[in-house]
Amino acid sequence: MLSRPGIPPHPWVVDVAVVVVGIGLGAAVGSTVTTETRSQLSQPGGPEIFLGSLSGMAGTYLALVMLLLVSRVPPVERVLGQDGLLRWHRRLAPWPLGLIGAHAVLLILGYALAAHIGVVHEASAMATSSATMLAATVAVIVMIAIGVASIHQIRRRMRRETWWLLHLFMYLALALAFAHEVVLGPSFVAHPLARILWSVAWVAVAALVAVYRIGMPLVRTLRHRLQVQEVRPEAPGIVSVILSGRHLERLAVSGGQFFEWRFLTRGMWWQAHPFTLSARPSPPYVRLTVKAVGDFTDAVGRLEPGTKVAIEGPYGAFTVHAWRRSRVALLAGGIGVTAVRSLLEDLPLRSQPIVLLRATSAEELVLDDEIAELARVRRGRVERILGPRHQVSMEREIVKHIPHFRTRDFFICGPEGFVNECRRAMASLSVPKDAVHHEVYRL
Ligand SMILES: Cc1cc2nc3c(=O)[nH]c(=O)nc-3n(C[C@H](O)[C@H](O)[C@H](O)COP(=O)(O)OP(=O)(O)OC[C@H]3O[C@@H](n4cnc5c(N)ncnc54)[C@H](O)[C@@H]3O)c2cc1C
Image (cartoon, rainbow, N blue to C red; front, side, top):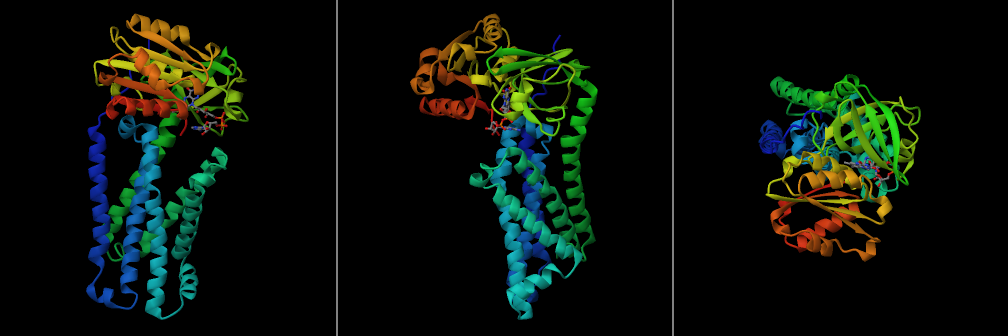
């Protein structure tokens, strides 16, 4: 018996969400515009103060949207996947940061002009004028520090865990910014209804983050009580971890999806890392297969039976639900076989999948027998592409092994270099973009 099938995505949810977010932005900007009078605008510093208020309102609204994106609300996550949500989060990030920075600069300038004093004098007077202004100053400094740390060249040099801990301070900055805004924002002073609506929006988004990032993972962890049963070597540096748990038949998960895993040992409990299920759960067992590439994945190979495990997920849109055309091909690079192996299980019999497994040597082809058997019962076939990177052209291999490639859906999974090479090959072979689904094993 397998666990419950995963819940299918509904793409219209994202369309509705985009419309709602757009209306919200219009309302936030509109509420600032309508509170401004012509006489206020004609005063010295009036235009700067107006633009400062506007950019503050728009900036905090977009920060709220960014928070919504990291809450990973399941109906949206199932359509966009965690990587899609993070992509939007990163794309959006410069806007709220830029707008909130502009808010601070414009207001200092505007009030300095209004009071006929220097900007440095005005800035220090403003920052210390009240508790909420002090809170706002701290919030802007924290946001700018995190913004700078997120610049690709700087972030690359940081340990992922350091960057993540630093990022947590954004929650504090947003709480401070919100407190400052509802007390002093022109859209809220003397507008109790606007203040209530804005507060409800923030509390609702905070509740979504708390429910989906903390509450649900806690409930799932306690419900399933997963613990390590066995760590089985698959190849040099690659192990399968078999976990046992309770009520796994109730865990709705699709092949190709992943969880964030937290192994509750002394050195590992504080980090969660993503690993795809390398087989659909078969109650009371689930399995993941892990390649050692760093500290955490090294330590996975030394896990003791009985180690308790906390989970967050399932996540990911790399599932059979993305399949649209009649034919299908699955391409796995290295440890990307995990998603391909579990996704194969969800393909119907007679789907005749073509599976390309790419590795440097035969030794690295893990789960090979299982994949061959799953493909065989679906009347498909498996091709193995071995050899060093510089000797293999994925474009040539696709043309050689996959007939009708313009009328197939492609599922590609593996390290970034492999996925990018396959995507370039697809583009040059004129495979439609919406036929290419991919999961990169790096966030
Ligand atoms: C959606 C997804 C599914 C994955 N599934 C598998 C799988 O089934 N089997 C497997 O062996 N590997 C999988 N990975 C990769 C695995 O998560 C990383 O190899 C692992 O987190 C590295 O941790 P480390 O501390 O050992 O190595 P590090 O030295 O910290 O990192 C090595 C590489 O992994 C990336 N990485 C590190 N920590 C994380 C993290 N928390 N989240 C995302 N990326 C990270 C880094 O960008 C770096 O490139 C998956 C990754 C993603 C994003």
